[in-house]
Image 1 (cartoon, rainbow, N blue to C red):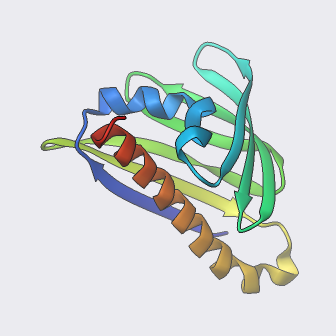
Image 2: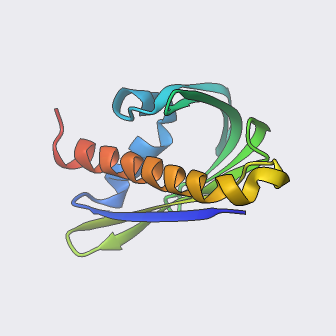
Length: 146
């Protein structure tokens, strides 16, 4: 099962970044690969969100359970339905001098064992690139507000 972890320092307080991460419906406004994110259900510290992504012309859809830890400014997400066999991870915000390190982890499984050996390295690179694009978009939004 491929696992991807990307980090990026941002010149912003983690308390300023967390609301941006939590407002997932707005991700498509500044993340090019996302077609849409729709909140289907909102409870105390969780949401169920429906995602549509366009990765190199291939539409990938999933529904995830997002769990928000306000005290630690941490988000855990886990696919509950969708195109991949497994898709889950975390947004972790760690204080740094002069800002915050944003870490995004993605643990996924394509779900077709016979071609996993061939596709996993390609998918892992694609997931890493997309994850870094997400962090870069957040960094840009925080450091250069419109």
